[in-house]
Image 1: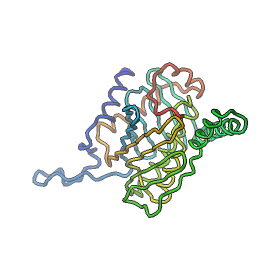
Image 2: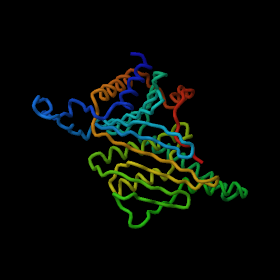
Image 3: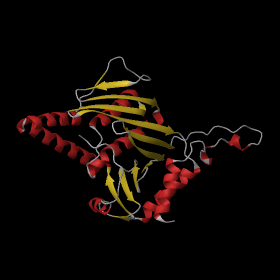
Image 4: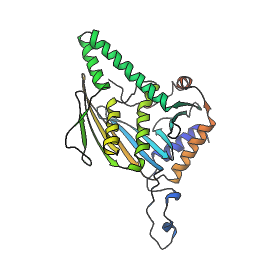
Length: 295
């Protein structure tokens, strides 16, 4: 199978596959009886997927990605991209796989965390310098930047699930909903946070706002929720901007989806592993869908 056929097959299976065809491994034995009614699939907490859609409500644009969870591995497939991200939760590693370039690289979770912290701290330092020494316009832009990087969100009182939770700050308003799911919570939270931080170690052009990470932290630590919707209203100097993320969890994987995952793993094993910086140079001209640019 060619690399392009592989990519098409995986995208078809993971992005467009119906949720009503669970894996044979998750079927109840009763479904094999001719006289019995088809039994509902038994959800395997180690095998599920989350479809994520990002909506730029200012430009009427959207980006769709799928996270496939299989044991301690998480596969991210972004619709329209020929690059996959694989997170190994057990050993704390992240693999970037370029299908067109037949290459992959590996980052540790520590490298992802350090890359994000370095990026954010550098931006905070630059904004602080402008606040101290810049002209009036530069100081106004720097203040907006600091509010973006350090939102200092405060939760509205008397707001608890299942109602929508709202948090506000001078620079951004955030609201979210979610579902309680203690068995999947830790894996989902670790994966989402890793994917939010990862771009800081790459091109740095589509870093999710700090408010996104802050909202995830409240969701996990205070409410034990897996997100279903996140809405951000940023109060930028140039004017307000609204973004929305939706998360749809499907508790089973189909046989076709499992086969797609196996093919991704096989492809990873067959590609050449190169250093991270070289990998980024290799795929520099490969178009990747991007989330909102920071202000």
